Length: 587
Image 1: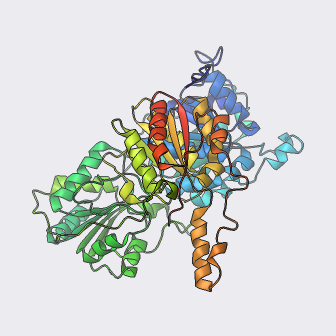
Image 2 (image 1 turned 120 degrees about the vertical axis):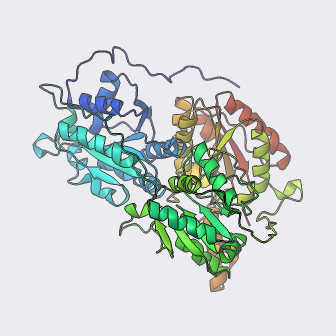
Image 3 (image 1 turned 120 degrees about the horizontal axis):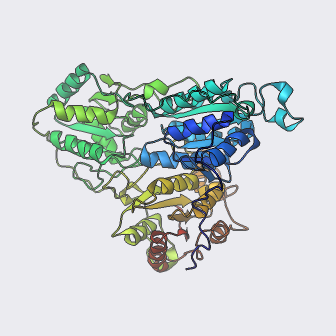
């Protein structure tokens, strides 16, 4: 395999950094961003923040934060999103003017729904009309740029002076980190960036703030939860959004074992509990499996720890014939972000006790406050749900998603990996998670095209960890956001992309089949308006044009294990690799 011909990773500017004085408004802004400890800023270059761009390179030396060039603003946000899912920390993304913000808006909504921290630096043409260049500055200036995304960011501002801009950036960083996390946006007037300073302005002392970023439960909430746990015979824990910290992972396991509670997890969120544990009887799903509905109906206490859509989950259990009769304790701080525009707050939770605290801090408090507990006794359960796939009976039947999952497990065995994403057709039984970084969940807002950028962001965060980032993406997701992969190749980020290619927007084929049956119309027409064929996109050629190593499409089961093993070995040696796998549509 031919290595990359040159190393551009450092991208060290000439004559930059050192003792260069703060002379321009954007120099002060770059100084503050450096003091915030931001390692990267992903951006698509644009004139609205040309001043800040210059300062980050020539004043700050392209170090902390370092510029990461992207090919689309959605990718810049998605990269910051993937980075935050691994680290729990915000990355910066710079968005050019109103036009870039419109490009980025879907990815910002994903990050909002996924509750990840992110500092988005926007910019605008001169707010002062007298300073605008003809034509271009007028169409790149908005009276209230933040209004485009205000309904799905945690905080936004458009400061009117250099001093105010420094305060706004410092505040945005603090706001986005505090639980519940969500993106924060600061729009910088190009005039402020390019303002020559008479003297350096005071830089906010960002190291002074030692406030906790998350808050634990009060004593009464701990007491009431312990009382409910002590009275329960069949406790059920719903583990939703949680930290990637191994100590928090161990505490979740310890709490479940102390009370003999069964545990459900969710493919929409990252790994929160070992999937092979005896107390995790059902594989996670995007939607509630029927067997899990039975557990909800049988439980006498449900402890929900920032579970996504608790009301909908309980309603789904009732729809399966298992209405919940349990006491319900819900621990989440999510209500602080609920607004009238977005319905990602879901339905009203039917709770007996609401605990507005960080879920992992509640787990810690429950373990510390209580002595040894007598584990509850669930009746013996038959945990043998039928798989949703139909295994290929012969070579000609094609590759199933289960075949792909098994071959990928084999290829990754023996060294740690991080499954960044899986497609909708992935069955929860094919997920093996024994560490919080084994799986990162989905994108929050279910926006197609986010997978490639999030994979690059995760690869950035995992660089040097010894854990290989692997993303299994649908062909539609890759085609919509695939140019994000160029950034991984450009910065030499080891990454393995596996495309589960059914040559279709198959999720909507299923919807069209449903409509046809409901209306008594030909199901055979469901492929029309969905197929990605004639011509069929050449995904390996596309990937190679972006700097990835990619062989031809894998079409047969016997060829899949060696192809994935070769690709994984190449990625572990430092390459960006894509494997295109023709899969049978999930039936």
